[in-house]
Image (tube, rainbow, N blue to C red; front, side, top):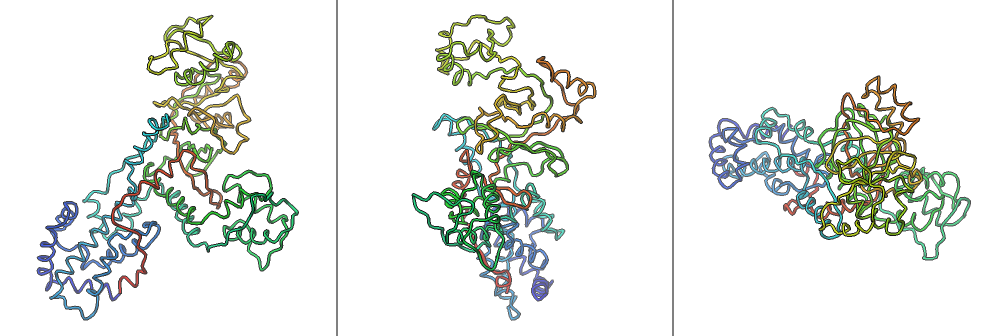
Length: 548
């Protein structure tokens, strides 16, 4: 209340002209953006005399929901003018400093709003590093980052004028539900106490169910810190049922091998500094800036590092299944498209790059490979006449990309050994990737499912077909069983499209648990090494101290 009264009294009509004059003078050295916002206010102060906005901004700067990196955003400089808010302050002698304070608050406001839109990451640098993989490692990687504009001067000013800057800040938050869950995870891990490392030797063979050892007490205490083991007054040195359940849960959250053994890998993960996990959460908060601010009410999400596909309706997951994604040298692209049709009993038109990298070398070793795997060859993409006996020697020069396009089209016909399985779901895109069934179901049992050339193989394709039936015509639905029982290729077009989004979330929450996944393509590392040097280092100070 005292601050409200002081700020209101300061900008009374008696002192308005003097302060406006000082403000106008100080603005001459500021950026066009700062000047424009003040111009919208007829060059009057934006904060002095507007205590509600002042308090809202100061609280937001200290709130990790907005400022999760605790960036300075001029807070230190603002704190240097805290003497202006004392009861005995001589207003007449301090109009210049009051003007400087008002401008600092505006710059802080702009900086926080910009941070909410783009964070402090140089996204152009990240994009460049991804593109450079082609030259440095012969990896063609693609991430279609959503480029967002910084808040306009008019929007910044309108929020101030309406005294509604908190809601304005909230409107800038990307994917609010996912964002809020990550903030909650960040708060949990930041508040975790430090722990002693659990020692183990090179020859350590691990603990299994029923073992007894004093290190098991330390393991239980460590799992209490991460929320995987229930807190107790005392802990036994026996590997019993509760620890078995806790180890399963911990390994599930970090995608470790579920063998029931507390091995060296498990203890290595437990010994990692909490700061590394905090950094991972922060990086995933940063990442949200280059995804759409909102996903539609209905969409399919493929989270690449989690090897999972999820079908969302009205904010709820209605279907979830395992996915096999592109291996690190052939990464699945990150982008958004619209699924518009599906094919039963698909033909697989083998992409030219796979013919070069995979098929030609295989044919050199196994000349009858095409015959064994129902692969047929045609001349070009228009000619429907099949080439019965292709001279493999004619293909060899085309392993070299500089020789131009391969003049042959290779097609694997429908069948149980077709690489696409019995169904594929199409969302047209320039990368020629899609969701599909597979002839190799065993891959879904593996923890790191990075085996494709970019497409996404899914474990329950016909359950997805069932979920998508509302998007099919009734007469097509009636034909599904018929075509599932033969090998005829058929296309069913959707009556309305379904958005498909591929993503790269290495930290996420599910069923109240916090999951961490490996940075399989190295994108998180690129982001962490692309922080802008904006001069706004981390700054943490109690709000009350700053104000008084």
